[in-house]
Length: 208
Image 1 (tube, rainbow, N blue to C red):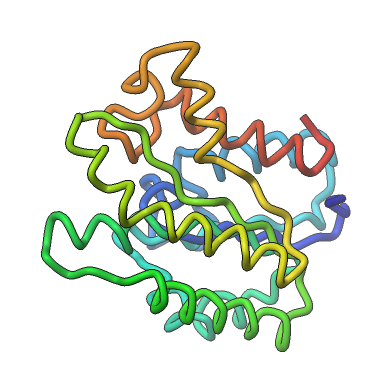
Image 2 (image 1 turned 30 degrees about the horizontal axis):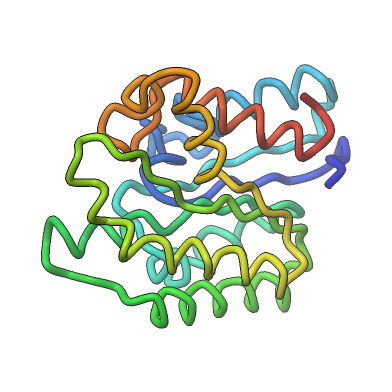
């Protein structure tokens, strides 16, 4: 994936992407990986025509991204769409008895990607959902999350999207420092965890 100086890049997903962005300011990028990647892109490309947006919303699932396609994706007309979604499709099963099975997750995600292909012709980057095993009860989530990671990988192939294998990358990172160093609750990245995602995104764009 090559980023052009006049691209319109959209980062979307759940709380990991949202990361404290100001909803009252459309230009707000939050404080996470999206902001880190954007700052690097803006510095390297030094182009006023480069536009970068963050529309992550805490708690969202794949179905929520599909439902807000018109309001976010269609309205912004991005040329690059970066999506990180899936952990809440698992988490709600364990904290709210509100599961999303892998089949429904795939249906919602596929419909979203079909809409992007049909209406935007944008380049797509899929960041697979990830999980570190802290606290210990997170081990049990693997039964639900792993099929959703497989779906994300399958859809990346099917739609010709770039895939960032974050689950494996965080597992590798946890061999260098304890898992809680990267994400204290196993899900939400620390500053170091967000930097790891941003660096991976930029490497994929040939800009790290």
